[in-house]
Length: 116
Image (cartoon, rainbow, N blue to C red; front, side, top):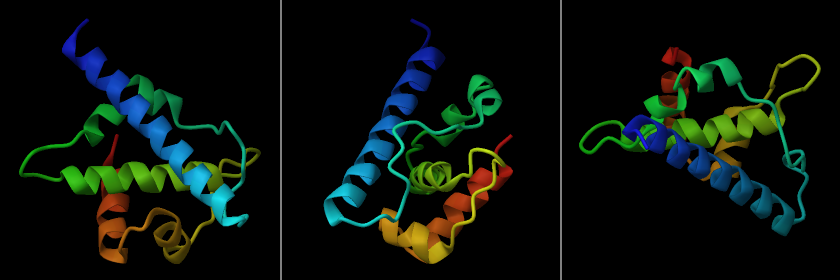
């Protein structure tokens, strides 16, 4: 299996695990912080063009920022209004759901903003 395809599969699996973990935390806490939908839409064209592979861990680089980007993307996907494709979510809400600091979240959002 080509290396790029393997990396993509690993990243997709990690993304799915992160979404499941956040959903489980919300269910355990008894809160309705996020929709309990099992599936949500994601930017499939971006994923098909290896957008997720840009968010891989890089030793000595922006690895933790890339992880923060994936965590933020998970929350944003859950908060997304399926009909409009718009998610309205605050920094505080994302930080509460992911455990990220505001600074780390800002770094992750910058990465998502600049992703092609």
